[in-house]
Image (cartoon, rainbow, N blue to C red):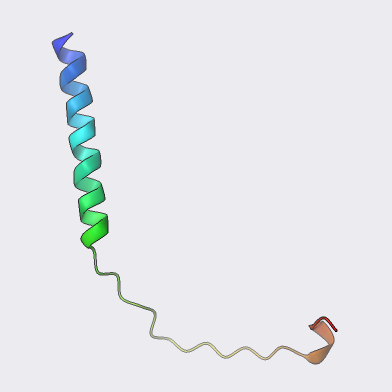
Length: 45
């Protein structure tokens, strides 16, 4: 029983740590400008 609870609390702790890291990670916005020309024939009328 103690082995199962140890594995459970370890996985729960790793999940919480991962959520904290992802919530505090400052991912930069894309800086490359994309210009795409769409012809008038492909647009709905």
